[in-house]
Image (cartoon, each protein chain N blue to C red):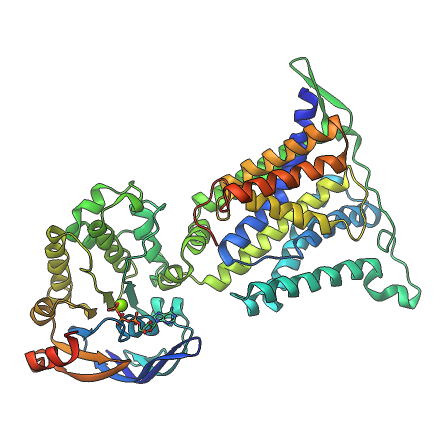
Amino acid sequence: MLSIKNLNSYYGRSHVLQGISLEVPAGKITSILGRNGTGKTTFLKTLMALTDRSTGAVVLDGQDISSAQTHQRARAGIAYVPQGREIIPDFTVRENILMGSFARADRKHVVPELVGELFPYLVENFDRQGGLLSGGQQQQLAIARALATGPKLLLLDEPNEGIQPSIVEEIERAIVRLNRELGMTVILVEQNIAFAREASDHFAMMEKGRIVAQGPIPALTDDLVHRHMTV
Amino acid sequence: MFDVIFIGLSLSSILLLVALGLAITYGAMGVINMAHGEMVMIGAYVAVLSSIWLGANFLLAIPIAFVVTALFGLVIERLVVRRLYGRLLDTLLATWGISILIQQAVRLEFGLTFFGIHIDGLGPGLQNVTVPSYLQGTVSVAGLEFNGYRAFIIGVTLALTALTWFILYRTSAGVQVRAIIRNPKMAAACGIDVKRVNALTFAFGSGLAGVAGVMMSGFKTVFPDMGATMVVDGFMVVVTGGVGSIFGTILSSGLLGEINALVAIGTNDIIARAVVFAVVIGVILFKPNGLFSYKGR
Ligand SMILES: Nc1ncnc2c1ncn2[C@@H]1O[C@H](COP(=O)(O)OP(=O)(O)OP(=O)(O)O)[C@@H](O)[C@H]1O
Ligand SMILES: [Mg+2]
């Protein structure tokens, strides 16, 4: 699905990602784990060409997108749900979702039916301003916006960070459902090991801008977690 | 008194046409285009030249000026501004250079003076445009006398502001522009071609300034440096209204135009300008993000 070879990424002069190689299999959830500040977000941003500069090869379904710009990557089928959600506060819920549709191949401005099934709250509140939603609802909105791009691959950056427990479960269920029922490929950055183990098929552990361990999820031992994640 | 308010309104209109373009380009791209005033100047010269050479009607000069200045804007964006995104000072300097270049091009008649060729309507001198008779004189409505030409300026501005509003809030292109103003990176991640939309936005803003130039040519003399003060005035409006707020830009051009007219009528233009500067400085001191800011830059 997504094949990444020797990816390096920079903010100005600081060299943050250092030679990342990873195969992301189709139809699976791959979790990216690691301490704060190791470059997980930078990894996802680099996949979207949102850092200042990057080198290395990124191939999506046989299509080399290494030098594609951000909007071209979105149109190639990668959808990004950023850490901190970044919805547009003075756009309505509908406008926020439809923003995603600029990446659709057919350019149709429609809210996918799926959004109504996964997050009925959003559909019931189409005309509310995005900024008036709670953190959890904004997270759902950011996922809905990503789904509106009609993606092959979904990048989720800590979708449960700082969200009220009642909604966490709803979002976790939605992620699992997108993958199991609809076969969506997901790269998930996650701090909650329990959820990562439950939901994902593969993992990659990062430390200081490199991948230090990767494999199928059963290979994610407590020892690995302790070594690379406890502060 | 009513008269003065009406004059203020027509000044505000010109200010608004100049400032709208700046507000959108500064809001969406964070670019300060010092050559924006030259778009006003080019618009005014389009009015001069089209009346001399095409025998064209003053009204026809409006769409011609829009197209010509929009194309100028497109070329400036492609050749210079695009390469300098995120480098505010470099853009400032480069577009200032462009503004001087354009002024000299008009003054030297695109270099033809060196060959002893003179094009009527260009050159260092002052030019005048005659407004057609049906726009002169006064119209009286409900017992009040309106200066016809000022009413015309206000009408054109209202129409163009409505058009801009419509594009921004009712079309897919407008959604893209507003998304870029709010969050360019997320806009790109949603598949919006930020560079392309920015180029078109830049062209549209330049076109509006060009129309402002045509309007100005009807009541002011036209000369190569006339744009220099316009860019300053335009930015005062944008900063006072709040970067990123179209509504703020509209209100602040109204405010500054009226203050200018009211003070000028009691005293003179120079004192009026000083008062406007004082108001702007006051606003920046007490509300650094402007009267209606969404976010500071
Ligand atoms: N815009 C930026 N400019 C410069 N350096 C940055 C920028 N964003 C992140 N960094 C640096 O890059 C490194 C990796 O940051 P990143 O945000 O990718 O980490 P992370 O693993 O996502 O952390 P967290 O778990 O806190 O979200 C950090 O050292 C950070 O300081
Ligand atoms: Mg992060």
